[in-house]
Image (cartoon, rainbow, N blue to C red; front, side, top):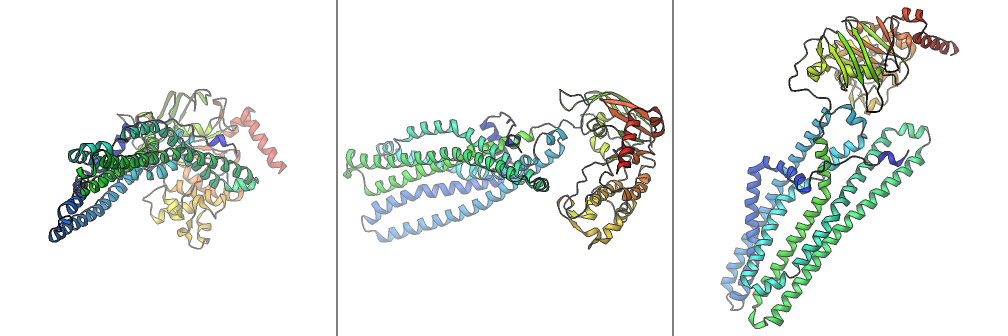
Length: 594
């Protein structure tokens, strides 16, 4: 298992950081009233914090120095009341913002999940499932602090820094200039750090996505890994991906740490400059003790918000890559989608036609070339041919899982590109080789084919495919809870449940892609009765490698070389002694040998 299989190869949308941040913060506009209320609370809290040094200065210079104890007590009571109100405001602010941010994350996650469901199969074919999960779960969770701190950190701290600077320069310009003398140095350092930090965090997010993709696939394929004794190889790949993840994190965090250290240095230089100018330049007699104390507090109130702002900026740099990756998917247009003037297709009768259809999954290999056929309502068409010839592609095109590049596909005279996807697929029953079962009860898994199916319809469908008997033998019958992918059931049992799920939908067009591939011959004979009942009166397409299962088909298409090379009933094709005859003879010889 090569580590290159899990390298991140997706390109970001290219949107600027500010544009991405603005798009993310636009979700806050939904909660204007709450945000305005929070801003009023923060204005009050900032005002109290700015007043505290002035209250201390007044207490020292105006009350303690002259022994005015009653006045000092009144000032202390005022300060206590204001600060208690501030603490209460902070608690309320935190509660409101936590509620808003959680709601926004739910909204973004719902939007992303809903949009992903509209994307075509090519999107999923080109991305490991683990990388998609990383978007929906990890990347979205990382946005919470950005949303919350934009309101609770960015706005009040900017206001605090500006107000502190104004107050300091109004009270004493010389001390203010000394206290902030290291600010230009900080601006230069932050600019240099910003240039490199964003790319480092982008790289870290990519490495996280690669690791998630590998772990998800590894857990899903554990049976295969253990069957082939590949534990050592997968562990080696995991260790390499983990090492890359660790190195990328260290490179990114190292820059974050440099930011904090730079601010601490500037803070210390500011304090030293304050006391040097106040004592040596201005002289002790020209600056009161209360002013020194107030300026000492204001220096902390100036640099501490800057430290908070730098941490918030680091959060932006850290998480903006996650936002870009989320919006990259949200901006991905579905290749298969309804046009502007689509209509709902009426109840399908089952007339299907291909007119000079050409299709390829990529620009290099053409899977179908100039394919034409006409199917009458109620006909059963069997598709046979070698692996990779295009059998599954044909039925996928009928369901419009992919769009053709050439020709026209019509159902009952309607070009399928001109009808809504929902109205088309809702009238089709599709059973593929992948008999995927969801976590839940057997009843729920069968009902997935028709969400409003009654218990009687579910049981009737299970009986038709001879799944009812084995279901009843389970401890809880139809209420038996299945784990992911139907763990605990045999492959054949899972396929019977998948067949019942298709049958309960009562489709107008039926597609069976290797529907009986995992069922033993004896069970297949029983299921064939249910298949015959389901095929009756419906246009059906059956893909099968076992030719014994399609002898009753109205027509058999032999698919190869990008098209239909033979067509007819089983008897007609055997009489031709062509490609179908060779397939039939090879299977008879194989059966005789066994």
